[in-house]
Image 1 (cartoon, rainbow, N blue to C red):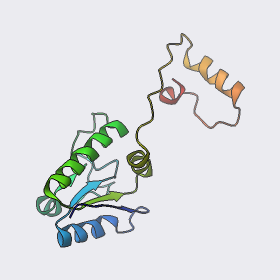
Image 2 (image 1 turned 90 degrees about the horizontal axis):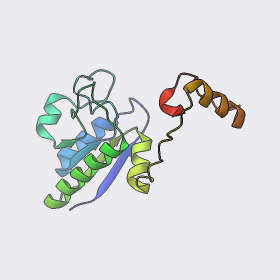
Image 3 (image 1 turned 30 degrees about the vertical axis):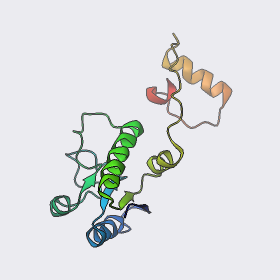
Length: 149
């Protein structure tokens, strides 16, 4: 029987262990919300399932990309849709597990419309000065190009 359940909690609280136990008990599919599990080369800093778990449980959101490839919430939503379609087609439960609340919120609320990128001729220093003028309490580094643009 298809249903979705999310196991959310703090780092090292046993979420992956519980998800794996439930997946084996109910023949469920698991979607990892861990933003580091998507990277093939990152095995220590994440709660990535073991090779045995990956061999015995159908996982989504694990070992998708190399560390030099970009991952974002839009790609995560596509992975969620694949996991959900897989589970629905087989009438299996879908267990969503991890601590990335932003991804879970996006699953629930959907993606917001993309903000149009500014085609400003201002450099980072000028943008930073404008930002400080508008909101002097905003905490951002002067060299944080990603957020400033």
